[in-house]
Amino acid sequence: MAPTDTRTQLLDAAEHLFAERGYRGTSIRAVTERAGANLAAVGYHFGSKAELLAAVARRVTEPITAAQRAGLDALLARTPEPPVADLVEAFAGPLFDGMPAGDEGGARRSRLIVTILGDPAEEARSWTGPAEGAVGERYLAAFRRALPDLTPEELWFRMRGILAVTAVDRVDVHNRPSPGCRVPAAGEAARRYAVTFLAAAMSAPPSGT
Image 1 (cartoon, rainbow, N blue to C red):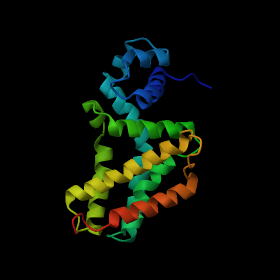
Image 2: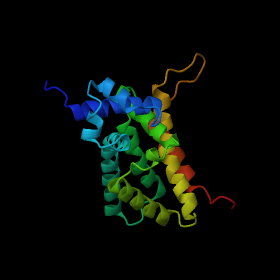
Image 3: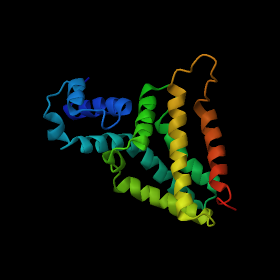
Image 4: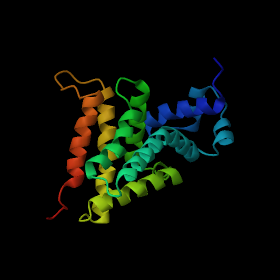
């Protein structure tokens, strides 16, 4: 097996540390020490800690984004106005596939997404690139056609809820349950439960009606 290159070692180390400690709690020194690299390696390969976080996040999300794009393309090829449940399946399904139960990498990716979602650092909110933005806008437009009574603000809130619910569920699957706690659903059952719940949540009447 060929040795792992320094850039990949840095990404692997940073993924672990950002997931565990968040952006501000992770130092460049900690990343380079875990990766077995010199202190200047982050600057050489990424330019800054913020760009390192962006690279880590995109490595996790690119396969998910590609699957979401393909799912929406398939739906729109059948009908210009897919139903809400199908849109939820196409949007949320790849999140389950990208963060599978029973896989430590899936647990880490789940923790990373949850950490980024809740991190107050500005750098944790500005990592997305054109690909993520384009897919998000396409789903937003499709949901807007399917749910015309929702305000743009409430529709966007509900879409963010899809990501949050899925990521938190994936983390919960991998955490060791406390004695007496109910073990969360895993695998295909969790995916079915999530799609059913999220489709109902997305389809609920507008707030205040």
